Image (cartoon, rainbow, N blue to C red; front, side, top):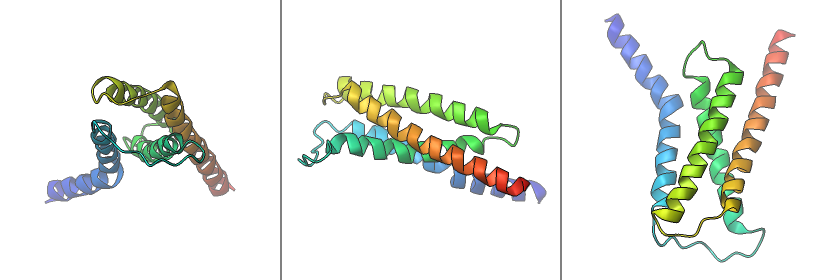
Length: 138
């Protein structure tokens, strides 16, 4: 009985913290694999770079949430470092995939927009968590 309850809690925990990141990563790869993806012709603020920025901002939020909940023993600093490394490697792979496998155009600026979007969210999330900890300590 206790084992079944623990398994159910583990499933809910996985679905809440880890599955959204996995699903989002799969969606990124699925979209990247589309050979003829039509991007709207919007000439304001390099729309495709803004899209990359937001895409990876969301991904970074989901990833850091997942990494922070891998274990009770993982420190916040370690989770943020792991997330940063994961996001950079994933973004490099994604741009490589777009360029070489889906035959669409890719650029270093796409990769830069991915990383900037991710790091912006990670920075904001880090500051928010530090403020929450400081507030709890006072």
